[in-house]
Image (cartoon, rainbow, N blue to C red; front, side, top):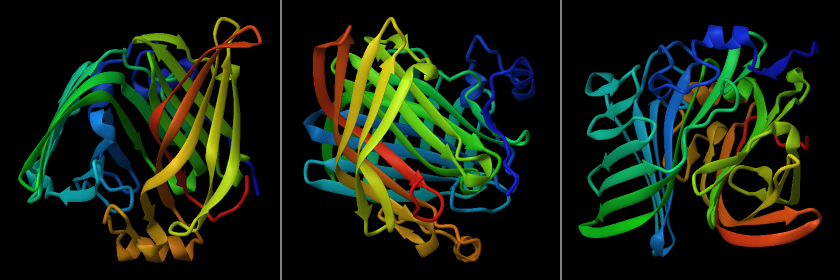
Length: 364
């Protein structure tokens, strides 16, 4: 099989092609970036770690990743765990009742909205059971690694913009008539691309964690075999909103404790280790999974979030011998700071991270 090139888009011609500045992130980058063409997808993601042990995740989609249709098919997913709750809901709306701005993050799907300016955001979700209002006030500047895009060949791409790497969250959730008022730490990012990720990637791990005064965002993407299983480690660390390091050449990555998930029928690793040492800063961040809070299996057409893959997509992925799946995990994230060879600071907190696995279960 001919090997194709997968690369981080970081050349002057790449910025010109994408239409962005290498030095400044603009509000339009958090606005609609796709055109509804077949194979395109886009989502605006928010999560929060809230007091009382609650975790909240809300995602707005221009169309579901599992839709594989022409045009937009807006929907929103809602996940709340903690306090004895494990709630997973999804709502959709016709395109005529939805709106996506190209000027910045201003998205409406029926009665559900997310609006912001790279610093302050307001999010609203509601259905027959839940009404949720969230504010997110950014503590750290928006970040993208180089252009934020990975090119697979020269025409296919995947894009990621951590619009709010860390922020303060206030959430009011009315659930079955009872009101929860919660506060904590939050995060917002924006993803889009022009072809199904299962054509480009073998799998990825992504995570973010608030650990003491530190905020960590990490990702480890492995491309498909035809792209020579190219690895893309991404790691950025902040302290009190100040970026300390983000040099991908300073990252050593390790995964341990292989386990098997019976729902997705995939192996995953319970322990992920990112060792970051750029000479000025040395940190080791370890994710240890304790529970799986959400799964989705495309070729079986179901997931714990009640998301449903279309019959056409199920037929397609089976015919192509694909098996896209998703696992969202919670557990303990431990940060260790080194001075020389000595660990001088150790902090552990709860965190959220995920594995997306696009092909058949195989060790890479």
